[in-house]
Every structure is written in C-alpha cells, then in structure tokens.
Length: 342
Ligand SMILES: Cc1ncc(COP(=O)(O)O)c(C=O)c1O
Image (cartoon, rainbow, N blue to C red; front, top):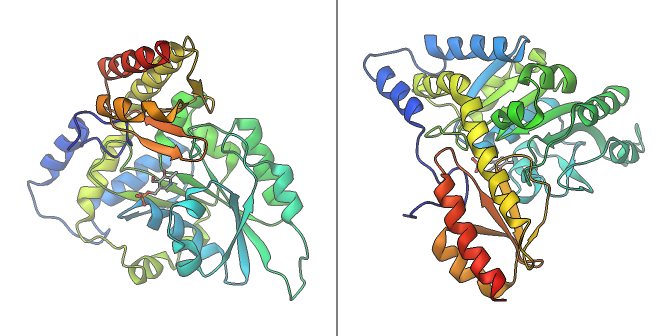
C-alpha cells in the first residue's frame, strides 16, 4: 500500500458518497443483468445530463468499454483511426485488434490530440478492394496527457467524420473532468462532438469499479447485449454499478474542481524551478514533469508516481479525488530541494 500516491487516479479508494450509495443499495434484493430499476434510472439521469437520448451498458473496465463501444460500428476490413498515444493503441494489449479484428491506423498527436486535417489524409483508396477502409475515429477527452480538445477542435473533427462517413467514438475514461476543464456543460460537449459512442469512465473518478458503454447512435446498440455477453463483460449485480454511477452524476464537478485545482497548484509552484520542466499543458488532473533521472528515487519516496516516458524521462503526477494540498506541497518541497541543489 502507498501512503498517498500520485501514480494514478485509480490508486485512490472509493469516494465516500459513492461508498454510501453502495451501502444503501446493499439493503435489499434486486433484479440483475441490467434489468434492475437503478440501471434504467442511471440511463435516464445520464440522458438528462447529456441532453440527448442514449443507451447505456455497464462493463467491468475501461479497456472493455473502449473495445466494445467501437465493435458494433466496424467490420474486420475497416479501420479505426486514433492517435499514436491512444490508450486503445498503447495500453490495451492489442485487445482492439483481437476483439474487433480491425486495423488501427495511427495519426500523429500534438499534446495528445489529433487534427482533423490528419484524418482527411488517411481517407484514401475508398472502394479499393486491396485497401483497408477507414470507418471510425476514436479520440480521448481528456487525452492521455490530460489535455483537452476545444469545442472548435471537436466540431472540426465531427465535421470531417460526417463528410467522410466515419463514426466517432470518445474514450472518456476521465470524461467527468471535462465540464470544469472546458468551462462548458457536458451537454454542450456532446452536442458539439456528436459522438456515436462514448466510454464513460467510473474507476478513475471515485468508483470502486465499473465503466459504462454509451451509445448515442442507438441503432448500433440493438445487438450490443449479445456482443457484451460474448465478450464476458456482462455483470450480474448491475445495481451496484448503477448506484455508483448515479451518485457520480451528483458529485463529479466537485471531484473535477478539486483535482484540477491541485494539478494547477503544482504547475504554478513548479514554474519557479530552474531544472524541472512541465512537458504538456496542464488542463485537467495531471502534471507531466521532466527532471534529472537521479532525483527519481527521492521523489518516489515522497509520493509514488509512474514514469510516462523513460526515454525523455518524463514522470506522470496524477491527482485523485482525495489528494490533498499537503500532498502537493510536500512533493513540491522535495522537488524544490533537489532543484536548488542540482
Ligand atoms: C485514457 C484511458 N482510457 C482507457 C483506460 C482503460 O482503463 P482500464 O485500465 O480500466 O482498462 C485508461 C486507463 O488507464 C485510460 O487512461
């Protein structure tokens, strides 16, 4: 066990309000496999929050959410366009290639984001029987490096998808941070990006476990219950997933505000240091730091973190709902000491 960790927002425990919701729902019996009242209540509440009709299905983890949120849209001879640092590509052990059976086509990323123009460049050889046919774009919001696509960028990506008959998926492992980070409602985000499907994250946002696969293009949700079962991602006691997600919809902005505030505090402090660099814009709950390799052990003894890039030696410092100002300041103090004595 770590003291308090900056390793990931899934190193923290369960948010107290969410734990309370779990205990409350533990008092009675309930229908199962998504036929329970709470699962429908969550779907209605999410639909109101996002301002559109949708279908939602719980799964156990984010990798499954991504793979299954894409699978209904893409055939094996069609491709998925995503960034070269997409979780889908880098951290899913080729699950997309295995379960969807499709090729990933990698687009260059800048600060974690792809550009509409690069999507266009990949629209080639349509109708050519020798070439894979592009069918879906997957973006991550917030991105893997904690950055945010602006509404303008989302609109441009959506327009490009529409022009070229491509579906759009959003990996939203940390989707609930968007409202505070973008300074606009989740409804506006969804109305602007108009994704066909979304992986709506729970595990990184204070839940014990659980993610939701959300379809806005509900036509493609029709066979999803079979797809999820075949993929062994159908939980039986879905009321526990639903109860957590219903509560998340009440508390997400509080979580987001807290995490973003702490990340920005660390960023502000670090700006004064001479030998420590911030590698990506700080827009959500994470700060990427470049510092001399020799400092790593001492820093990790203060608060645990992972190296993001062992070539460039960039560390990922990530806030959780229960990270504190004291955690940030203690870490900064250690870093400042190393920086000044370098
Ligand atoms: C951007 C992003 N997408 C998806 C996931 C997948 O989550 P899991 O580890 O639950 O499969 C993660 C987890 O790190 C993530 O950071």
